[in-house]
Structures are given as structure tokens and as C-alpha cells.
Image (tube, rainbow, N blue to C red; front, side):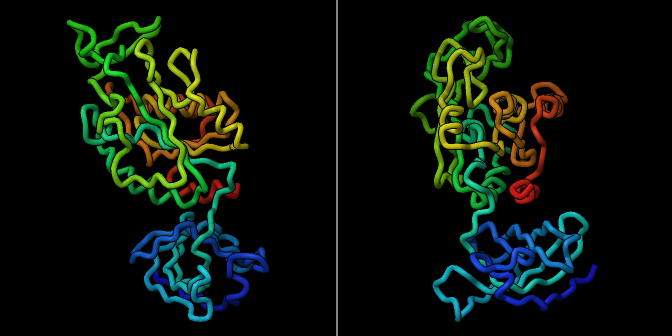
Length: 310
């Protein structure tokens, strides 16, 4: 489909901020200015109300001399509607500091640690979700990161059960337990968040610290006997809605998302910002269905902006 050029906007109306016309407002979710950076943009205009959610790839960036130093810039962008594929060129003035989600929305990144990406328990294709999550981060004023933070004698490690093999099933603390390779041991490089991950304005919560029981969920141990403090922290800060991503879909992400719903949070799983272990064929699909049944809304990264306004 050919690109249509649209220039009929009054810049005073498309400018973000006080005084902007509520029916013609553009919002950019990322301050990044590199060539080909993908932004999320909403354009509300009387003639284009059928195209409310638009992903844009900027082709040219032109600083606005009249607004130098104001955080606003004039952009020429090729716009593509995510709903119908409609393409056009949009010219407008945007604030590069806009945060799309309100403070009561939080991004929850589960266990994106070295051992799960390149280490002893590496999840297939895990590194691919790092840039996806980094593109989402500017849309949220804050984020929460969970970390496995195991002592060396943790009961989930096969190495601590002579004669037992990795991925074998045992009972631990009265619960079924998969035995794992040694991973995310406290104070080791493997337990650190993966390099390159945007952790600005973030809070970290550790789990799996009790050697006698595992903790898949970012909220509780597997028996729900002890809280990590995450739920209490979110509620104390007035958080109502969570966007969950990370590793692994069929274990810690699943447990975290389901617990979030049970704690009363409106919860979304960003499916393409997760990867799974898949010990058995179909484990990831079954995990996603279990989350859906529990009340988790399954979305993709391109829908995160849309969810901020629904």
C-alpha cells in the first residue's frame, strides 16, 4: 500500500501538553533518537478516529529551532496502523518525555538473570526478549524486577541430592519439585540481571532464599507460606495494574502472573516478551492457557500502549 502524506495538522493542536486539543494529540513513548527507533504513537484526529493505535518508524528527525531545549521536536514519520496496516506520513510536534502509562501501572520483569539467559539453566532464545523489554520500559514510570536468589545448599538443586538427576521429580517441603542445575546462587555473576537490561527506576525483589522450599512466584514461596514483600510494596504504592514478562513462561512467569490476579491486580502477560523452558512438548501453551483461565489477559508488546488507555 502506498504511503499517504498528511500535513493538515495545526502544530499547536498536536503538541503534547497543556492546551493541546484533546481530539488531536500525539504521544511518543520513548526518548530514544537513533535512526529507525520504533515509537508508539497515538493520533486522535476527527478524520482518523478509525486508526487510534499507530506504530511509527521515524525516517527523519528535525529539531525544532523555535522550541530548542524544550524537550519537543518536529518529526516526520512513516506511520503504520497496527489494526489495519494503513500507512501514511505524519508531521507533528511531540514531547519526547511523555510517559504513556499512569503510575498505578507497573512493568514486572521476572528473573531475567544471567544463568537463565547464557548460564547453567539458559532458556532457549531468552536474549531476544531483552530489546523487547527495553523498548517497553519508557512507557512505565517504574518497574519491578524479580530475581532467583538461592543459597548454595538450596533444595531445588539436583547437585544437593546424591543419586538424583537434573529435571527429576522429588518432593520438597511437602510439594512436588523439579530438580534443577545449580543456578542463580547468591552473590555469583549468574544471579545478576542480564547486561544491557534497562533497570532505571526499578525495584528488585529476591525469591528462593529459603533452602527448604522453592519460589517460582515473585510474590510467595511455592507453599505461599512466606511473602517476598512484592505484593505489599505494590499495594502500598497504589499499584492496580501489572504487565508481566520475563523467564520462564511455564514456571516463574506463570506463577507470578496467577498470584498477581489472586492478589487483586489487573494482570497482563506480554507473551512475546517471555520465553519458556518447555520440559515437555506443549508446556508453554498449557501455561498460557492456565494464566488465561486464571484471569490474566494475554497481550503482545505492540498492545502495551493500547492497554494504557483502555
